[in-house]
Structure formats: structure tokens, C-alpha cells
Picture 1 (cartoon, rainbow, N blue to C red):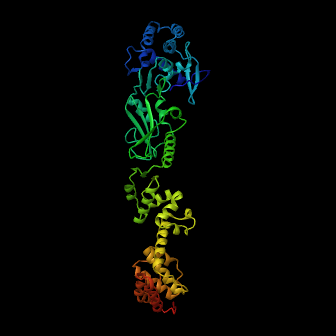
Picture 2 (cartoon, rainbow, N blue to C red; picture 1 turned 90 degrees about the horizontal axis):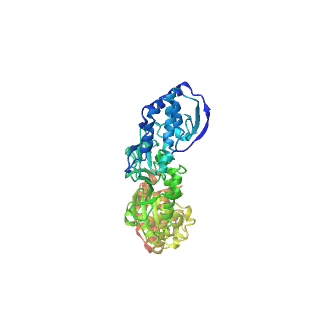
Picture 3 (cartoon, rainbow, N blue to C red; picture 1 turned 135 degrees about the vertical axis):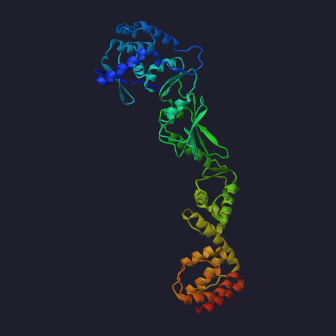
Length: 496
């Protein structure tokens, strides 16, 4: 949109600028058609006909600078007066003192002639500049309710919104974006800014990852004249933060659209504002909606959980939790750790109760400080330990080897090899018999676990393995007998 600038006083023209001004005046003197916009509308009669008919009548005055100057002070047609005053320079054969205006931080020299606004003089004297030329037509076009588009090499006029495709490309290519598909980045992301030009039925599409701190809409209207330069645009943000699998869009309208058009908000700012709001709305909506990356599952919980990378136990627990608690779960990756972390703050207790029981969870301390996957493993093991305790008697007054063997046997029964490995890693194995017993449990479980055992300890462990096997497979009184036999075989001298 053309804007008026700040005007300064007259000054003498340098020789080079004087030559440029004279060349400009001569070009318009020879061909006033340089000023006539190209028609792209359906007007019954061109609104510029009268102006250019009057300009044609100046032909008989072209030999007299004084006559042209007089013509530049008559009537109400600013384009006519600006033209007459400007070509009088060529008729006079010399360039007078220049005035100067500040436009968008640029000092713009121009020649004052006739009784016409300085903006009109700048517009005509820079008729080949795609931005400055709009100053000549601004008032006229708005009065006649026209839409005008200033391309790099021509000016196009229409009575309705009718943007030339070259105009769209000219202005979009002024932005920092460089897309393979002209005006579309082609990426799938959390959200996409969509600027649709209705008269062209063409879209600019910029994903949230590509969106820059500029206003593309401001670029697009920077060389337009219209009463409402936004009447040909639909601006929206497509995003995935909705309950259904189908795409959703939020239109940018009202004051938000004006702020964007004036450059007070940017492409990135518009997208971020919508995404933050819609994500917050969805996560607090109490509806079931699941997303991983750019894949939207809607409320298909089975498909969502099935695509997560985690253990079968974790998947089963997560599914049961989400069946009870209707939530929107929005993940960037398919890692189970991210899914659990997303829900942990508000759902840790409920998740762990599903994995075990209230009794187990009550003994786990501050749940917020626990690592979700480890906490689930421990909760499952704790619940199994409760079940094991019902089948294996509690044995009092055990010695060091007895305590170690009893603990490792219960761990193996409750949580399998993973819990066994953790308990062996945390055990204090300082003397040979305890190391041989621990090694025997490793051999019985068939697991690979780093450690240093002497050849005697390795042989002793192989001897003890059948006793360990019996402990792990026994319950009730048989378990007590199996432990007593292991203690005897270990040579510890401990008795029950």
C-alpha cells in the first residue's frame, strides 16, 4: 500500500541525477502511455479514459514549457497535472532545483511542478519504480474502488480483486523463503500457515518449522492499492491439535489479521500463537486424541499404543490407564518413555496402581521423583513379591549367605532376570562364598552379566547351581528345605 512520506526543502541537482531526471521527463514526453495501467478487469468503461484523453490534448502545448506549467495548475485531475508539470521539464530543457522526501528511510529527490501533491509528483517521476509509482494512483484508485497491482515491469488495474500470478510470485520471491514448489515448502509439521489468494485460487503454504520472523502478507500487499487490500486473502493455520483424524484449520481474522498485515506479528508468531492455544485447548478438553509426530490416531487407542516402542507390560498398563482417563496425548516420537513422561505428573499414582496395587505404591515414596519406566518395573516386581510372600515362608535370623540366597531367589521369582541382575549389582559381594552363590544364580537364570570370578568361585558356582534351581522352583516347606541344602553345599556353616 502506498504511503505518503516526509518532504524536505529544495536543493540543487547533481549532474548525474539531472541527467536521469531529464531522461525520465523525455520518456514521458514521448510516450504518456507509459503511465497507463494494463487492464485486467471488466469495467464497462475505463476509469482512466478521461485522464488520458486530456493528456492527449497536451500535444499542441508540448513546445512550450510555460503552457505546460499553466496546464499543471488547472483542474482537479492530479494525474493530468502531474504529467503536464513533469514533461514541462523536458520542454524547458533544464532541471530546476530538487526537493526531497523521506520514504521508508530513503531520501527521494523529485522536481516540484504544478499545483499537485508532492506524492503525485514522486509517483510520476518514478513511474518505473514498482513501489514509488503507486503514489501517483493511490487516491484515484481508491476513489474509483479499483484494485491495482504493481509488478516489476508493469501496472495492472481491475475493478475487482484479480491478482496476476506474476505479481504473487514477484512479491513472494522478495521474502527470504526459497521453496522448490514456488510458494509451498512441502513439509508436514505441527502446523502450517496458509495464505490463499482467492482470485488466483492459489496458496502459499509455510510449515511451522520453516516459518520466519517476517510477515509474508505484508510483502503481498506492499505493492497493491485497494480500499481493503485484504479482501482477496484468506489466512489460516492448519494444525493437528484436534480430536478427529481429519485436518482442522483456524482462520486469522479481525484485529489479528490486521496486526499480521501491518507486520506487527510474523509468520512464525501467527503459527505459534494458534498452536499454543489449540494444544492447550485440546489437552484440557477431556477427550481422547492421540498423536505421534505427524500421525494422528484420533481416538484409536489400540493403534496408538501398538505403535509405541516399549515393553508389552508398559503397553498394557498405558492402555488400561488411557481407557479410564480420557486424555489427549501428543508425542514427538514413538518412545514409550516420552508417553509415560507426558502423563507422569498427574497420572503417576494411577499408572503404578494399575501396574501393582495401592499397598505396593504406598511404599514407593515420592512418585514424582521416580523414573517412570523403572518405577513401573519396580511396582510390578513389588506386586509379585507380595504374591511370592504368600507362597514362601518368611525365614528369620538368616546369616549373610542365607540372606543373599533368599533375597536373590525371591527376586527371581518376583521379577525375573532383570530384577535379579539389579539385586546382584547392588549386593555387597566381598568374600568368595557370596560371590559363588551370586554366580550360581546368574547361571541358573541363564543371563550374561559382567563380573570377576576366580576359577575356584566359578567351579563352586557350577556345583551350587542345582541347589539354586531347586530354590527357585520351590514353595512352602520345600523352599525352606532347598535353602537349607544350599547353605550346606556352600560351606558357609549357617543353619536355619
